[in-house]
Image 1 (tube, rainbow, N blue to C red):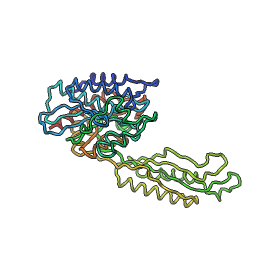
Image 2: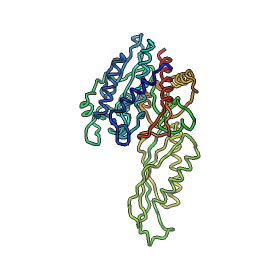
Image 3: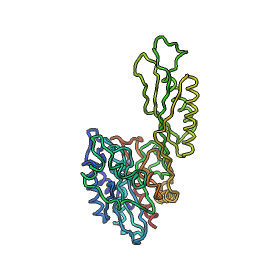
Image 4: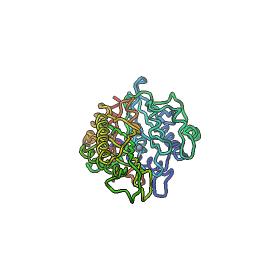
Length: 406
Ligand SMILES: [Zn+2]
């Protein structure tokens, strides 16, 4: 091993002592005092490791290790240090501390590289304090306007800009990441697939595309007593049949298509009224954007059939659509080779969750390394990854960097 797993663990432990909830969860919401404390430590450690630290206008931190060729593009490694309100010890943090450990190990081993290497801590990845998620990487990728992000408000009514300035992390727009040779984000899987496949480290091929639909079914509200079953236009019955029907269609496609009805509301929440209007949400994810559109067509077919049977009508409102990400082939293959050099299989996986690398992949060749999540849990105090897997994942990152800086 080139990397020092003990040192990595000590750094992660120190950040994870900053704000601990009663249940043992991490609480480092974006741009709070706890986030500032974590940032201050990272800044200190980056400087101690000889990195040139700069902050951009969204508060994203970059630590640059110069290369021997002043004109060479950097190889970037990063994730986020913010957490959910009662989050885990690894989500995000591993992808910042792992790269810092890679830098420290390169320093120990006296390795000089042609390309500079940058360690990045993106602001507000979680979207737990300022919605939506992935705000700072989204600004760098041109998805969001910085002024719009500045005006977003936390639940306490504080704007992103106010909080950014309050903690002293508003830097310069010129400091944003503009171009790079490659970007690699290391992250925990946050799901149960790697554990089921008995794999500790994964080479991430891409991220599932997401479509959010809001489906409204209109029937006729009526008295629950005098209305015979055969004459009803029950919107909730139609919705139930539609949800089951959609699930059957989704199951026919097999992995990795997933669909979830997370919210359902009826117009009347009364015991003795037949529901006249029902609205439910549908979250569908697939690795292929064409297939995602086909699934929407299938959802439409199911609804048409059910509504005809039940004498109801429906309306679909597309709330959000995010196309699938296919990571850069060269970067992905390089990570695969790095895994093999460490004695691991080139195990490929698709991410079901979004990450900063998703947006950055739109402007820079990007890839990701996954580390197994025990029990598949994340965004909760039970989130867990073994130190063996973390050490191996970080060693794969080290080997990936050595190949990418050539
Ligand atoms: Zn994360």
